[in-house]
Picture (spheres, rainbow, N blue to C red):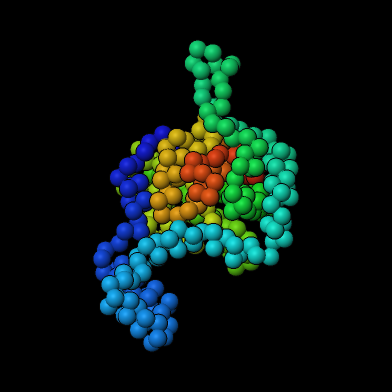
Length: 296
């Protein structure tokens, strides 16, 4: 996103789990029914209440379980990937793949001395060693998928559609398809329906789409084919991602930036409270896609 923080929508994203009282009560009741399976256990709870002992805080339990839902979804769908059992080998393989690529970093330009402009953030692959296992699992799945030309070419088609869309950025969630491979599920930005071209540099996932199973989010920086200046996450992107830790213990996102027609850059940025509430940014590299059949 082009340095615009949409506070009113961010607030909605952060507190999306705060539903009306009836909805919360239904969820709590559903949880109780699943956990308290027999008459004896119900009697125990009733007896504790009569003794002045507070019953379990089901609302808090539910929210804590929801905070781990991304990790559980990721673990369930990658249980057979052997390399995930060797954390050191996993890190080495990720770094090996990232080092093969050319990279495009988001630059903080020095107007007085442009030749000495420096990267705005640390995007070096060495930070792989500072991430949690689940963050590295997510990155490994993406760099593995990027070896598949059909996956890369599909990103090219998504970029082309984003360039044609003048009312918002494009984006969505990263989930697993029926074959167990990761998939970029595109979702129309909630901002698109405002039909305001000022929102072409912003993306907002709807609450309904945000509730879908996922291992990460993604969005594009592609109002035009040449968005090199905006490669990687902005400060606003990072703030929004870190705020997402209110509802999840891990938040990961991929930024896809169009560099020119037929070429894009992709970055990972994410945070896991197991390691830090501050996001780490890692440039995964530049990739080329087939432009055959892509309209101007």
